[in-house]
Image (cartoon, rainbow, N blue to C red; front, side, top):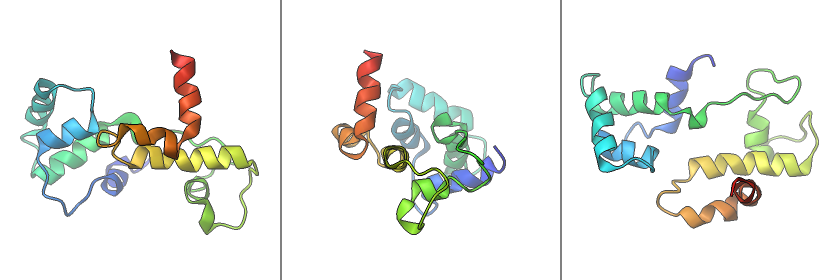
Length: 133
């Protein structure tokens, strides 16, 4: 995965004054308060609260993935996350491009605060969730 230790900085607000326990609660919404506190305890000796939060984010697999649309070169996924910035892409499929870019929004927006918005930003997820149940 390359420089994940640097990439996690993108997903953590580096200027916010955050509590490690609260951050674990937001990042892992299925945790209970005991698990949130335990997460904070395990990272307690690893520098500042911000450094601990960066390290916690680095453990979160939700932002890790493998981009496999040929030729799948490093950085090629950017044009699918932000399609309006590019005039064309190697894989011309409107449904794929829409679902891919919306999946980024589905990840980036804090669903713990507004869980019903997931279907507004990524309707394809509704189909996936229906198949699971």
